[in-house]
Length: 321
Image (cartoon, rainbow, N blue to C red; front, side, top):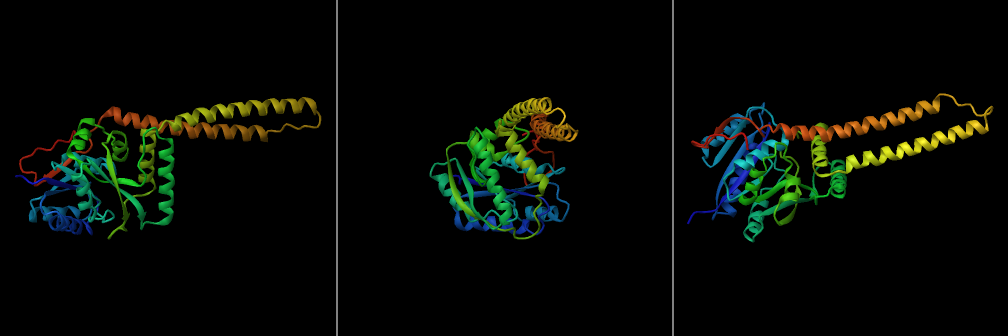
């Protein structure tokens, strides 16, 4: 009888200090805790500029159960791991961060719930050793998205989870060029099991997230799963128009009643115009985010373009997944 295969996906970018350690930790966890299962580890490198690729080649030479996809360029923090999930042929797939923030000890817990019948088992960050201010803003973001979205959103879910191969096939059939796995799991996923864990600090190196990558993530989820931005623009614009009309009527009446004692001046006009123009610019930018999201999906570009595959034997790369 063939063993069930667990697929572990490890996305990385400039992780020369962590990639060897995380592969070893995952392998030891599966061999020691889940000896009745076969496994494969699929590393996808998002065009690292340090020594990461050299180390990946060495890892693949030493262990044929470790596969690797080397991207031709950096395709972002969402496309790369999503593409790797689609390429895995495990009976279940677990994406895990290369920096040890996702504890490898969760793998057996995920598999246990999978064997209990759950096709999706999500890791939920009940606590985190990250910066407390960042944690606070993340919590606020999750609650706002959950409140505004018409689709149930999963708070403090980063994508660290077990996905059954049947759900992976759903992802393949979706053919989404701008995937947001957290939203897709909430919208299209099977009945799931949530397991809480404490997110660890990075084992080594620096995070590659910055304001712009975090903003991209926030806008992708906001424009994909909420109509609130457009509705707010409509209501605020309508309210501002009414207020401006009433202020104009009041201003005219005061001028007519106190003609000689009520100096008009240019200041009120400048202030009101500046306020209204600021509103217009803000909501034009917000509308632009929705249009940009639509445009990206309409172009239907491939998730990634692969430069090389390691340990895939005679398999040919399919960059259109």
